[in-house]
Amino acid sequence: MTPDNAPVARKKPAERLCAACLLVAASWTFAGVPTRSVVATEPATAAVERLVEVSLAVRGSLFAEASPERSPVSQPIELDARFRFTEPAAAEPTDPAGGGEGDQRAPLCRRYHAAMAEFATDGRRSQTTLAADAADLLVSVRGTTPIPYLADGFLSREEADLLDVPFDAALVDQMRPTAAVRVAETWRVAADLSAGLLAIDTIESGGIDARLVAVRDGVAEVALEGTVTGAIDGAATRIEITGSYRCSATPDADRWLLRAPIEDLSVDVAERREAGWVAPGLDVTATLTLRRAPTERTRGEAIESADQLAPPVADRPSGPGRPGIVWERHRQGRYSLVLDERWRVVEDSSEGLVMRLLDRGALIAQCSILPLPRTAAEKPPELETVRRDVERSLGDQFGQIASAESTTRGDGTRVVRVVAEGTAEDRPFRWIHQVLTDPAGYRAAVTCMHEPAMADRFGIADRELVAGLVLMADRPDEPLREARNRSSSPEVPRD
Image 1 (cartoon, one colour):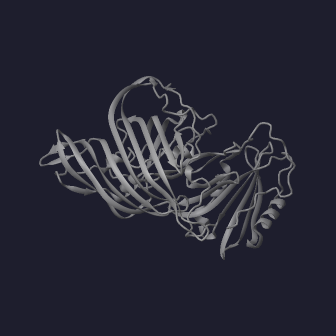
Image 2: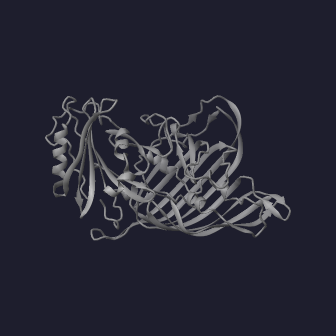
Image 3: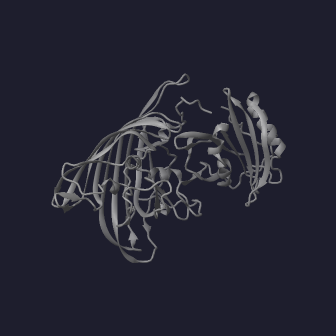
């Protein structure tokens, strides 16, 4: 396990995108693809919708702090993103104060016509674009956190990160005052709403203040200003905000009621964030603009989206989607993985996929996934063989085998699961090693590790992870290989 004060090291820092407050440090493994137009096929019905256009420009640097093994690293970054989508004109929460974690408000419907971001760092450029089969999606607002998802499938992690933009349209109207205000009057935006707008987890001090500057021809101009210190994914951050928005206003004696939707918003943000468990540090400035206006179109008409969306993803997993669940695909197609988005990728290389499980900013566990050579289906690894491999791999860190079992999933995949306990750096740890073999002989090793003190928060996360893992061939003619003596290779992660 990584020591508490160590920043995250990545094989490819250029493939990280500002995704949280400023689309910060989300994994990018996208390869550009040509785009094409999409034609809607739903029944034709007239509907008044709201057109939303968002642009985001980020400039600054990513950094990893110095450690005994590494010199400090800093890389300049540039990000330019734009989004265009329609949603029902009444698409806003009915409770202006938001809700708690158990908020059961109906999800919002969105149709994206464009969603694209270009990212540059260290002299390299990359681009990601939302796929056409993910254009129609739902947005669940949990508390003050908007979570996009598909009704009958799963967004890739890259798509989910792309859509994670500060000052989401689902939240901005909640910045309006709940009572009539006078010109020059100031009010404080609620702390939980400010955290949601900035796409961070918590606010420890400060806040965003709003002030009614003027009302001209029935349109109110509201200024925004503030400084916030808080945390995202366990990393401390400091954010300065200035901006303004406009919306229609109606007189109420010597005051004004701001009840109409916000029509346009412009925000400048400066953020300094420390390196954390799953992301490098950043020092950036950003400008975000949002424009909204009612638009009338007929549902079912062709949507002109040439050069706006990427082609549909042919192998996207289907199934009942839900908020907080994303999809990972092995870079050579060896497996498909549907998983909780709290599992965050920290390394994706030929040596395997490494992820960390975060829960409310705390590091709960680490996991590695590595495809193994195909073997004869009738020769899956034996339970005792995996037990020996785990003990050998842990070496002097091994203490005891806590449990071992072999089960078969409904799809015929055999899962050998061995739990070992031991110590690393004089601290107790638990290693959960699983070897999967499907009916065709395709295999993978999945190893999770966590401290016993995190057992309750970890729960059955390893079983849920394996349940979402489907093995596939990297190529149709992959030959069978004889099972090796150490069938649970690779080495079990140690510390």
